[in-house]
Amino acid sequence: MRTKAAVALEAGKPLEIMEVNLDGPRAGEVLVEVKATGICHTDEFTLSGGDPEGLFPSILGHEGAGVVLEVGEGVTSVKPGDHVIPLYTPECRACPSCLSQKTNLCTAIRSTQGQGVMPDGTSRFSTLDGETLHHYMGCSTFSNHTVLPEIAVAKIREDAPFDKVCYIGCGVTTGIGAVINTAKVEIGAKAAVFGLGGIGLNVIQGLRMAGADMIIGVDINPDKKAKAEYFGMTHFVNPNEVENVTQEIVELTKTRADRIGGADYSFDCTGNVEVMRAALECTHRGWGESVIIGVAPAGAEISTRPFQLVTGRVWKGTAFGGARGRTDVPQIVEWYMDGKIEIDPMITHRLSLDEINKGFDLMHAGESIRSVVVY
Ligand code: NAD
Ligand code: AHE
Ligand code: ZN
Image (cartoon, rainbow, N blue to C red; front, side):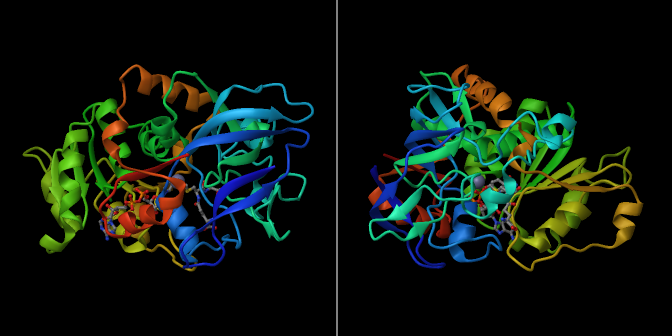
């Protein structure tokens, strides 16, 4: 079939909207009509050329929702008409990682996914001239239609609005999951969130759900403050307005009884390795945990004095918020539909596919939280 897509032809260039060829689903695959997709900072990161796994030409996008149109041979868990969210972290429930119950990082198809192809080693996308286009993160939701492995779709309830729940395909699940699954934050905790964008606000929302007492937000853009307060931020720190952001958080978290200070938990939602260091070092001696969510560019490395870890701080990371997609994503959609979590105020812009580059411009200008493309 032919479909309309925003194609990343080269790193650092705007996406080009064009008709592309899409082959039908093979064994174990499904054809999905994408109804809406968010634009995540990770799409920008790959388009910028900063992703060591970035491939061009490709069809980016990994935060979508849509309807199954056709299934390949042997597909049993979904059928045409089902509403689904594509999963860049699939859940096969059979690989050593899934069976371990210790990680959400299913390894069934990770290597081909990173090579921009389907599990059989071929791409379903090509230009009308016959040039192969790479898939992206196994999703390619910047195309009106896409083909996905069966294990990379989560079936969701049919009354959930695509233009909102698409965000559960990455940002919502990543932020809330980092708090609940990765950090396992307890009631009364003090937390610091670095970066108050599409991920950071969901970390804040997760912290409020978990019952955190103190939620310190850190951002260089003061315009992010109001929305973060709406979602539960209790204190705001602008690194450009304080001498030392780490010390500022240590001071804020001190009590009369505890003169050491430090956050119980911190979260990096920026992808900046200097910020990651500050996030670790602002946590409490003896038990502080810092979770890296941000994705850093090729070649970037983190550093700290080992003494920070010797004295009990823990540095960890999370992908897709530790969520097992086929199991957890339908549940998060339920939370949204039941009003337990909010998504609508974070979706600041709705665009057509033709306007998708405007979504990247808004992100660069710090004017959006999430732009959603509605097909
Ligand atoms: P975003 O652009 O919406 O938000 C980033 C925020 O960080 C902005 O508000 C910006 O002002 C702020 N910021 C930038 N530099 C800063 C600094 N030095 N100090 C404090 N704040 C600073 O991006 P997003 O969509 O929220 O994504 C955030 C990061 O998370 C990106 O690196 C993205 O690639 C990554 N991410 C990771 C996962 C995962 O599974 N680990 C999932 C989604 C996104
Ligand atoms: N390809 C990059 C890393 C990109 C990355 O870390 N991706 C996250 C999801 S970001 C979603 O917005 C992830 O899931 N990582 C786990 C995985 O298996 O990719 C690089 O540095 O090579
Ligand atoms: Zn993402």
